[in-house]
Length: 111
Length: 111
DNA sequence: TCACAACATGAAGAATTCTTCAATTCAGCA
DNA sequence: TGCTGAATTGAAGAATTCTTCATGTTGTGA
Image 1 (cartoon, helix red, strand yellow):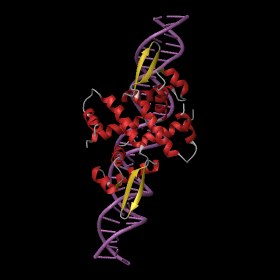
Image 2 (spheres, each protein chain N blue to C red):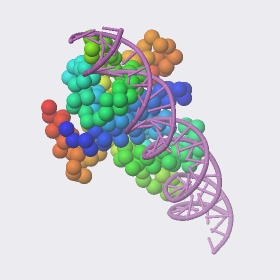
Image 3 (cartoon, rainbow over the protein chains, first blue to last red):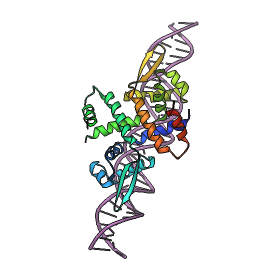
Image 4 (cartoon, rainbow over the protein chains, first blue to last red):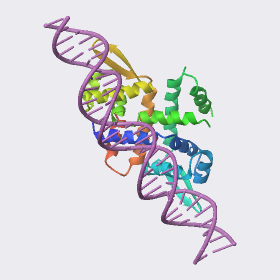
């Protein structure tokens, strides 16, 4: 089995391994959004958000287009939604019985 | 929206962000395996593999039982399979047209 | 009981990733 | 032209994660 393939998969998951990046992907699930809006909903410095958006762009998970004064981001593929859903299923399984996060995960699944 | 939830999701993806750990999960997809066998198929030092297995155990993605002289690992939940499949779909989309890894991903999907 | 094989653990230096700050680009407008 | 707001970029130190090595544990068989 080829090594670069595992490396590519690992790299891919690693780009998801950051709370701000996860948050961005979940916000983009509902459609394209300008940076300003993302910034509104995620409490983080503008330059930090830009850094994380750059990571997502490099990986190819999101795309950006400039519209006048603002930049609008969107998901590169709707498959991201499936991935996040699969992750939630596992997290739900794993956390079951350990309280705290469980209720939140379930509430979200019911949206 | 609660912060710890995004943190939990990010942590989860980060545990998948390592080639050896990905490899292990994919091998366990086909059923439980003793460490010795995993070691056979993954070219890595024994202690390194142990470290990565420990990460997977801590996260709760895999479980381990001792059977005599050997330790047998298995997936904690079959949902992991869905997750890896969703990841492959996205990778396939993303890499399409840039050669190299694409053929491998597709060959694997056809297994 | 000794010795050996199979795994796990602790710890330290190397490598990677994060956060933050200063500087920069680009568009729209006075 | 000169500002200002929106967003990005580069760089440096802080923090986290990897790899490796030495040591420890557990079971088996002589």
